[in-house]
Image (cartoon, rainbow, N blue to C red; front, side):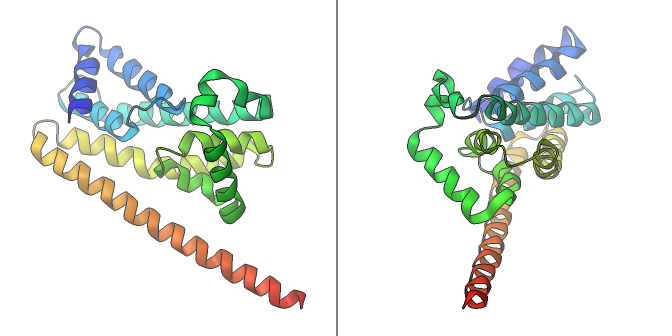
Length: 212
């Protein structure tokens, strides 16, 4: 709740300039994409609240939120693609892409392939390392990365923005549904990961049998 109120206070300076709300939301989401530990979902909810309070248009806020998410993610992917392994020497990157986390991300790619880019949108702690590593491998075309990440963002972004919009004047109701939404996303994610794992092991078993 403290993070939400802090962001709402920041964004609410929009009464001085209507464009401030959009610029503030976009900037915060861009920072989220760089691995800074600011909750992306709460940032989107705060943007929706600002729209609900009349400082911005909710539909425009949705597109601004979507743009902020995708631009931030894309910058990490492109950085990995351009600099390769050298990007791990950058001080900011070295803080969140440790050896252990890099190995874990590599393992996720090995198990689930490019589908992990869709799942990554719902994994706050691993999202940025996964996108960065995807670029570093140079085996994922940018258009495919954008397609997978964009598809996931089209699920998460409107949920949080419109939830904030409709709950702008009902904070207790809003926070209860934020928790429900977070749990719901985790449940959907668990189902997707389980289904992917089943498909992976079935294919592995089938390939093993055919090789004999």
